[in-house]
Structures are given as structure tokens and as C-alpha cells.
Length: 286
Image 1 (cartoon, rainbow, N blue to C red):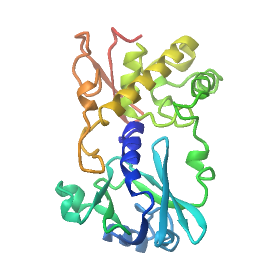
Image 2 (cartoon, rainbow, N blue to C red):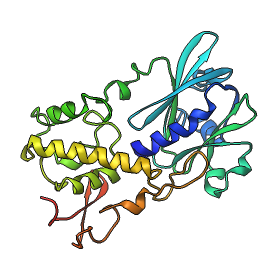
Image 3 (tube, rainbow, N blue to C red):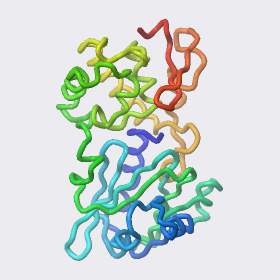
Image 4 (cartoon, rainbow, N blue to C red):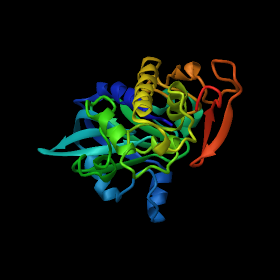
């Protein structure tokens, strides 16, 4: 959390700053002290490398899976600022920090970018699992280079099914494997549970025991959940916020995640898989 829909919504909101220059930036004591202690905190590279953002112009924004990136131009040189929101990262476009109304987000700001329109772009991260880094080529950034096609690409369904039926994942449980960006980018714990319920597949089922037809149905369910979440502004369980500080409504549409019973009234089971709570119904899913 945030997952693909939430990151996509943040990216769309941030498109309003395209065309502005980053005239200056400021790093929090947490980031600075982490680097002094030779720890890579929010900024996952040397501060000298990160300083390239100053006097660069934002000319476009993009997203791959749960990563978003600002394409920057400086002195006829193009490069990118890649960001991952981790568990609780959020961007805010404000005139000053006091306009961030939630105390924890205002307190735990990590990076402030001062823009040429007089506003500031603030990255806050309460739990500090997010990251930022400068990369010259998006395609050369390893996590993105290894990603499967986005769910909107025509080749995504075939890649999803063929990769899962390649034999490499036969013994894997289906729930954690669909959270692997090499299978399909952007699926996290919440939407994996939701999609598996919609497609009537138990999260504990091994990949080898799921037919191609059922995998195709699962792909459709993931798309359905993604699109529904986008239409409802994403899910706000605790920390997700839009650029303006708003909350999403998708959590009100959940069928199983965090609930006691499924839409059919059956009691839900919970199981920890890959360190995450999984919700499912043994009567609706098989």
C-alpha cells in the first residue's frame, strides 16, 4: 500500500506541475543524518547525485507498476527522478508546510522541492519505507526493466498466463506470485485478495493446479479491481492521501479485505502469506 491505482492517481494529480522548474530543494534531518551514518534512507544514492534535480524542469510524469517518475531536463540533458511511495509516502502541492493539515504528514516531511511557480512539492513519509533516486534511463533502472507489461498493454494477459504456466511457478501459491511485478506490475496485498475472491480462486492454491481459463479470469478480476479503485479515488486504509490531502473511497467497496464476512454472508478466513494478512472465503473460493 499504496498499490497501482493509488500511484496512478498521484501521478495524474502531479501532472499540474509539468513545465515548472525545480529551483531549489531541502532534505529533512532524517535524510541528512541517514547519509551521515552511511545509511540510504529516502534518497537511495549520494546526495551529490541527487543534487542534479536543482534547476531542472519537469517535462513529463510517468508510472510503471508502483513506481512513478518525473522526467527532468537540465541544460539540454534529460534524466529522471524515480519515486516509490513505500507504505505511507505521499506528495503534496502546497504554498507552505502549514497547508498540510494532517499533523503526521506535516511532521514527517522528507523532501521539499521549491518550484518556479512559487509553490512547493512536499514528499512526506510517516513510516519511511519510500525511496527516491536519480536515474538517467527509466528502461535501465533494474526494477522497471524487469517488469511485466502493464495491465493496459495488449500483451499483458498472454504474458500473465504464459509466465505462470511456464513451469517455473508450479509449486508457488497463487496469491504471493501475482504480487510479483515480473508477472503483473502493481498488484499488492489488498487488490490480490480482492481479485482472487472475484475470480473464486483460493489464495493458497498452487499455480500448477489452476487452469489457463481460470488464470484468464483472474487477470480480468485484477483489471476490474484496478479500474474500480481508480474510479473511487483509491483505497485509504490509514496513510494514503491524494496530492490535495484527500482520501479515497475504494475501501468502502471491498468484498473481503479487512472484513469478517464475504458478500454472500460466509465467514472469512485469514492467513499470513509472505508476511501479509490474506482474506478469503473457503465457500466462494476453491
